[in-house]
Image 1: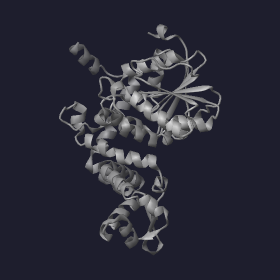
Image 2: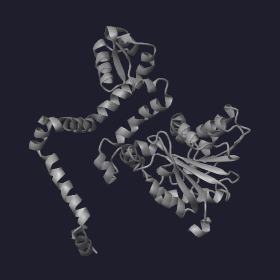
Image 3: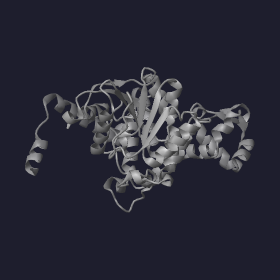
Image 4: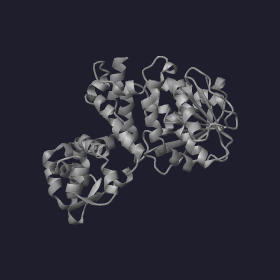
Length: 394
């Protein structure tokens, strides 16, 4: 096979493709040339483009430092402090328990990133990127959580090669990722990630519920629904909607307690099990998979989709929500961030809407369409209806 593969690779591309490849090769050679870059930086009509690209490249180099500035601000509650009103350096240094020099270094960094702003009289106030962080438990939890991700990414080549000696904090954090029997996970194993998912759920719940009103349905089954944070939001939007949740037994116990504490115990049925081994509960006319499918490899994801199809009536539907690869304008989120996050986690991969559509069709769904969301950076949404039977899909 190898000689055939080499011969295939050496075959000239079609005429139109060949022209584009020659043009791209010339472009790459120019951009790689120090002489051309010096000229572009000096020439008035290319200077701004050259400066933007240099800044973009430097941002990639310095991105870790930027993220650590954000982490320091979160841990020092800087955004909540600045939300009280502009304050001078001495007052802020006391609030942060830092020297004035250290506080100034942090605040100046935050200003450069748009997290803070300089105000009159030498004071500092909130910046346009810092204001959304005020009281935002979801974003703060994600910022804190990234410490585990950064540890796993300390040697990205070792991560890509599957080096067994590399750090593996994320795979331990997500208890089900490396477990041969996820259903046996104990309460302590699921506590941290369940809390994180519950805290970050508001980031996506609003987008989903705005894109697809649930009041038209009778009963919602949230598969892999965690502690029930999405169900609680759905219950507010659709007061007559019955609620069902399925997750690992230890997670389901947390969901049962949370929903009961919110006065939703009588409206909800919570079941525990392993959705890759146990049948899903029936009776719902809509099911949701929110940030679940991309956590699993293709074979597991297809098993899950078939299980959902089997649990739905012919008139039901599925909402699949997660950040998707190839989303126009949001490629770094789906392709870079989740590509490496899930690699560090130990399973799963980001998928394009087209790939997910193929998998849904293979699982027995039809009439599949993408629903627009206001913030595709946070989540994209696919609506699918049962089509052929699961037996026919096999």
